[in-house]
Length: 182
Image 1: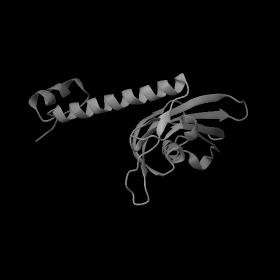
Image 2: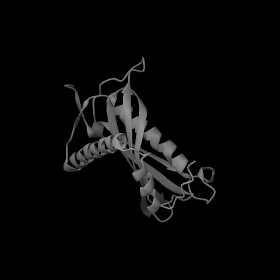
Image 3: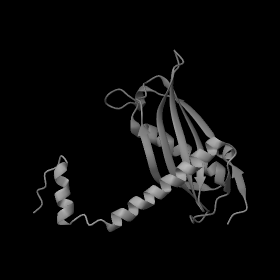
């Protein structure tokens, strides 16, 4: 068990970028893939700052695109470590877009990235423990713990489910699919 602890505040990162026409998708909104790239960058920066090590993305647990982002808006991403394991960290990221002409701000995205700290040889390395300094940090930590528990339950359920059984195939009748299995 680690005896080294750091506060959540030591992981906080904020970046802002003006959205340009080159960042758009075919409908003229900012491309989700571009936002994902920025999310991965800020998750890396937050986890690396906290752990003091190079970090890699282990999983993207949640990406909720809530509102579209327009060309000309100033996007600000705020990230911090919400949870730590032995070598892993869950980084929570909030994305807001500001209309720089009116000052109106909208919450566009919430994301959770699991990052793993690595040493120079690429082996997982222990990260500091997390000091929770307020109730919001406690809430975020507990939410991450619950998310991990639910993910483990889903993985266990998938191991136990026989997706090729007659019962499972019959249960697909209630969905918008047509089975043409030969």
